[in-house]
Amino acid sequence: MKKNYVLIILMALITNPVFSQLIITYDGNCPQIGDVFFQSYFNEQIDPGPSGENQNWVFSTVNIFETGVYEAMDPSETPFGNIFTESNIAYNIDNQESFNYGYNTSTESVNNGTGFNSKDQLIIHYTNPSTLMIYPFSYNNTFSDTYFGSYTFEGLETHESGTSNVIADGWGSIITPAATYNNVLRVKTEREHIDSVFMEDMFLYATITNYTDFAWYAPNIKSPVFAITLSNCTGVCDTVGYYTTSTQQVVNIEDNIEDFKVYPNPASDKILLSFYTNKTGKITISVVDLTGKEILQYQRNLILNGLQSFDLSLNKLENGLYFVKIDNGNSTSSKKIIVR
Image (cartoon, rainbow, N blue to C red; front, side, top):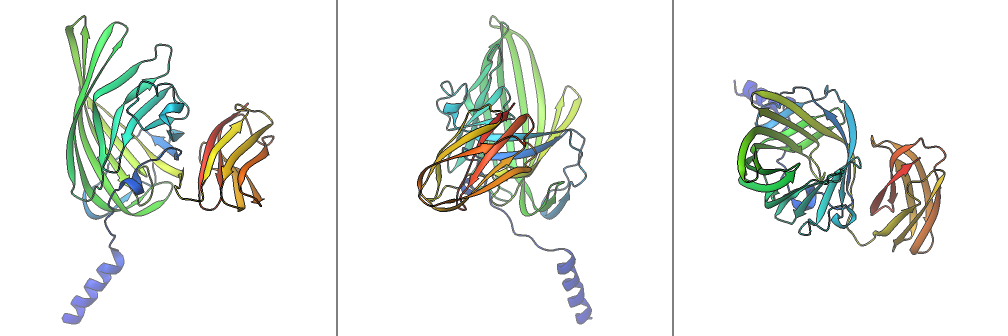
């Protein structure tokens, strides 16, 4: 009987591998300026699966409807950096008109608001910012937060407010259409968002939307590898989400690449790359499309460190948006280019 019991335990260990629990940290999981994340988006109803320990979430059959690039930027290089002066990072998707602004520290990541670079240049600037994450954050950790901001559009003033309750409710492994990740941590956020509309200080109406967000974090990837948002507004439910297909992340070490410039931009037949490096040896220059696929790659040997410049032919590229990436083996840097 004792022998059979030991065999049962052994088989359980073989068929159900035990994963360690990820701790979300600033160094391991918070985006840095220059990080680029290639993502695929979906809008189908998906069951986020169970909470708890040692889970195995499988989302390998998700159907995508769009791909995009999520870029972390220096606020000073964006249209509203002079307004969101308290921010130390900005985010943009596919060079679109909206820019999100945040302030990241070793203990928390907050959202300061959004600027829309359209004809009307709508700006939502939170006077009470929204806390997105605290560091470190591990299984069963929780925090709650409130936020508030206001803006005026077409003569109507809108007060945007909300509350959020966040918990790391599960850990284990996840399978996405792009990859399998072990030692992931799932973070669940329940939000109530209220838009209260006024005209000349007279209250008109309020819209309340309830959101439930699920985000899966993997070791040393500075964006969730999979995310689902479930929303409910006046009985109308919706589901959207994304998964990360590949990343280009900045490495902050001594052997770095500085002052990386690309011109002209937009370009047609060729571009000139210039940058400073204090490391000699092989350097790899590559061009990546919006899906994260490498289209071109060149390798050069640097004999002397300091200012470097290279011509790069674009004749093999179709018109569109790309990223040029430089990698010296220890540090990477990338720039967005438009070919037309």
